[in-house]
Structure formats: C-alpha cells, structure tokens
Length: 372
Length: 246
Image 1 (tube, helix red, strand yellow):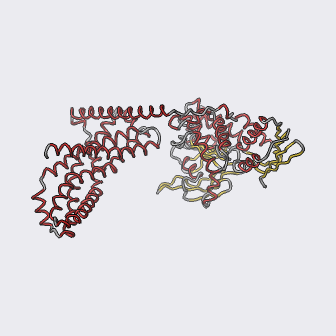
Image 2: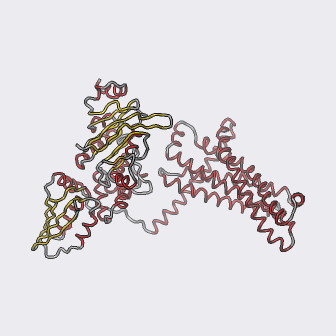
C-alpha cells in the first residue's frame, strides 16, 4: 500500500489523512508536509488514522507531539483511529512520552572552570606518577631483601617478548640509519677530499648517539606500546583486581619483570644496533668513497676511543627504565572503557620518546662538561 | 501465529569439535522463547548464528522470511534493522553517551529531525525505566543494571519486531532481575515483540518464557512449553528443573 499524507481543508476544519504505514522511515516526509502547511484560519484539526495499517512507537510519538503542538497553538485537535493495535501504541506513547521542556541539559562549563579542571588533571597526573615511582622504588627494595622475590620466569619471558623479538627490526633500522648518514656525509666529504674522515664521523655519531636513540625509539614504539595495551586490557577485564585479591602484587608480577627485562636487554640491543649501523656506513664508504674494509677498520681502531661505545651502552638502562616505567604507568592509568586504551597507548609512546630525548640531552651536556 | 524464525538441521563445527548436530526449532510471532541448556552446549553460539555474527556449517536458518545462509548484503542490512540485540554486558559504545548510543541507529538509518530523534530517544529511555537525566552519562559512569537497560533501549531504538537477549538477567541483583523480567513482559505486551533469549536464571525462565528449547548433547532435547518440560528424559532437565519441584 502507498504511504501518504493528504491534507484537506474544509471551511475552518482541516483533516490530515494518513494512509499506509506511519513508521520511522516515513515520518520525515510527513513532517516536511506538515511544516509547510499554514494553520491560519483553522479552528479544528482532525488527524485521521483510519487508513493506517501500521504505526510504530516513533509514529505514535510523532502524532502525539503534533497534537500537543496544535493544542498549544489554540487549535482543537482530534485523533481518529479505531484499530486496536494502533490505539494501544498511541496510548503507550502518551503514557511514556517525556516532556522535552522539563529536561535539564547538562550545564556547560565556563572557560575558567575548564582551565581549572585541566590543571587539576595535570597535577593529579603528576602526583599519580610520583606515587607510581615511589611504589616502584619500594618494590625494588623488596627485591633486594631477598632474591627469592625476583620473578625470574617472568623476566625471561619479557626478555624474549620485548627484546629478543625486536632484534631484527632494531638491526635493520640501525643498518639503514648508518647507510643514510654515511651516504649523505659522503657527498659532503668528497667535496673537500676528506673521505677518510667518514670513519670518525660515523663512529662517534653512531656509537654515541644514533644507535642508542634509534633503539630507544623502536623499543618505545614496539614494546612500550605493548606494555600499555596489555596492562590496560588487564585492568579493564579486572585481572589486576583479581591478582590483588589473591595476594599477588601486580608490581612484583607485572611491573618489575618488564622494567628489569628492558633494562637488562637494552645495552645488548644497542650493541647490535652499533654493529649494524657501522656496517651500513662501511658499505657506503666502500662503494661511494673507495675506502676498503681494512682501511676503514684500521682508521676506526685508531680514532674512535672506547669511551664513545661505553657512553652509548650506558644510556641503555636509563632509556629502558624511562620507556618501561612510563608505558606501565600509562597502562595502569587506563580507565574502565575501551577508548582509554588507545588514548593511553598513544600517550605512552609520545611521552616515552620525549623523555628519552630529554634524558639524552641531559647526558650530552653532562658528559661533555665532564670532558668525556 | 506466523512463524518468525525457523532453524532446520543446523550443524556447527569448531575445528573438529561438533557443537550442534542437527538442531530444529521454530519460533512464532509474539512468543518469548528461551534457549536453555548446560554451559558450553552452544546456546549463545546458536543465538550468534541467528543474528549473523557466526557462520554455521550446515543446515538452514530463516528469519522473518529471509534465509540467512544465502542472504545478500542488501537484504542482510534490511534484516538487521528489523531486530534488536541486547548483549550480556550491554555492549554500549564507550565513547558515546547513553543518549548518543540510542540515537545512533536513528541518525544513521532515518532522516528524522533532531527534535523527533530527541523525542524518540527520551521515550525509549523512559520506556526501559531509566531517568532522563541519565541520558548524558557515559557507559563507564553507570551500573551494570543500567547498562543493560540502556542496551535494551538501544536495541529498541528502531522499533524492531524481534528482540534477541543474551542472558538478560545475569549479573543483576534479584530485585533488578525481577524488574527486568517484568520490563520484558511489559514490552512484549506493549510493543508486540517476539523475544528470543538465552537464560540461566530459573526464576526468570518461569516468569517470562512461553516456550523453551533445551539444547543438550548437541541436539534439541525438548521444545515446547515449560509445563511439560519434565516429561522428557534428560540429565540436564532432571538437574535443572526437577530440584525446583522437590
């Protein structure tokens, strides 16, 4: 059957004849038709639903709200309907309809209020991190008291998950960085005929800065985000609560093993990054600058002091600690909804990379001033 | 009464594990139909198969005249607007408020005005027994029982003819659970719904269901009214129903 609305005006009486179905999908056209119709010079409106086959609750609400509107405008309004099912739906709509005027919209916060909330949020976040940090130190002391408290199995598992499985990508990234840096500087060095200095440049920049930084960035993106998501999901599924009630401290079972695993493995990962980075540079030096492998290694031995290597390696545990603790802190901050996992994972990666760079800058100033 | 759902010889396999071995049942208009059985018997699996969340290995399921084994994309979309599904924990979208959750299907599928959507949303909120002021809360800010009610309001948003409920009373306290049963009965009589539910709650089963199907040992052990359920020999029925009468 056709769904339609015909409007007939007879003297001062207007009748709205609905036909077919009055449902969610047909309301839109009826509403437009009714809105375009002028109510002037009309005393009475008859809503005729005799030819209506089906009316759903949205349809019934529609009829009721127009009826209310007409009455408000001072026009008498009558609904004609004799189908029991439709009548029932109309009655239900009348009974459960919410008067929109009585609704209280949630009040908008003023600018001052929002700034306040923002800063209190930062303050609470900072205090939260401090409290996390305190708990961490406390747990570490607990570790020192008895080696039995160390969860060796979990540490080994995390070493495999977040360090050994990352070996490939770290080696590749560092290799490519070595390649690119060497290639770009080879072009400059050729101009001055200072080909051999590529060894000095590569050795110092890769061992001291690039390899530790690249490793930290890859680990933050790969293992840090995984920590946040894992712990966040565990918090949502109440696994953390379950652990606590069973007397397993999450700091001992989840937090410390992850932090220790990364701190142990980071120097080794940096070592691998050193090797592949220098290898990448060596290949470019060989092809582009005609420096043979023997010559490269001789020069390397001659000009690159071991301290550069050790400084790079030394940064490892610090970076690892920052990455792991920020990632886990973010994981513990996850609230009881799925959105907050994504939010905190993003935050975790951004914050840990930022923290690593700040830490690196501090080291750079410190070591230079110490004359190392 | 018109047949709304027909399940014929449905077989489900997970790898080598046979879950359903030739299920047959039919659900008629206006019924509140329960799927019962011991845990792990595949009640929820069958429900998921009915709402096209899961494939079955063999057999036929038809809903409102559509054969969902061979259904095309367009018909499937049309069918999805004809039913409402309430998941166990509500499954409200956590980034949206209760209001937005309920309004979402209306905004996506109809061209109603904002005012009309408001009317419908608050009507549905009122219908399931939530307060209008709850509309602007997020799912993480409300209790489990309220989540279920909000989930029900969302399921009812498009005025479906068919409602699927997955353990509607699980996780509710007894008083809320009885209220929820009453709500379901009221909705059926007010809106003329056909309701299919999976339940473990014996009180809720006795209070609400017109007909039950008991899945045991991969097959339908019994289909019919509750009054005659004990006429069938089954360990599950023995344990589940008879102790009640003792």
